[in-house]
Image (cartoon, rainbow, N blue to C red; front, side):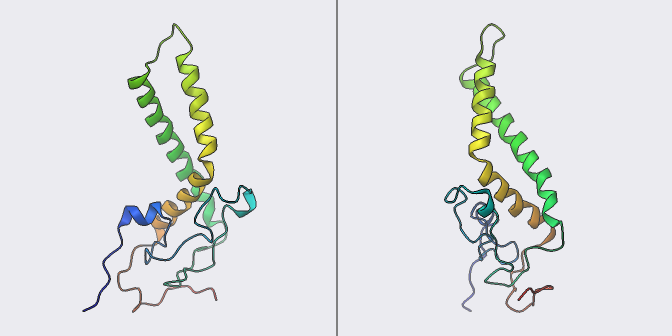
Length: 144
């Protein structure tokens, strides 16, 4: 048999691939920082070009990504705080905590396009599972 290996779960999230086949791109442009326009951050095809899975499952579907984005921002802030605490330290005697706060805000603003996209990728994976036999099974919803 000439069967392709299963794409890695975490790698397909980081590379923003379709949740059903883990091969097709979820966004028209893979680099969220290429076009620094808010209009183009979420440019997605209607369906996966490989397995034809519909991405926009219903009206208002993507509103739930705000919760995922919030959780990722909190996790990022906790991680940077722990790193700051270990490497620099936190004291009430000087302004080190304010330096961390300012740098954390700056980093969150800089990674925001990536954070918004990865939130969509994680959110849609809650509802659509990987199908290793996607060639044999038709997608439940097509949008041609």
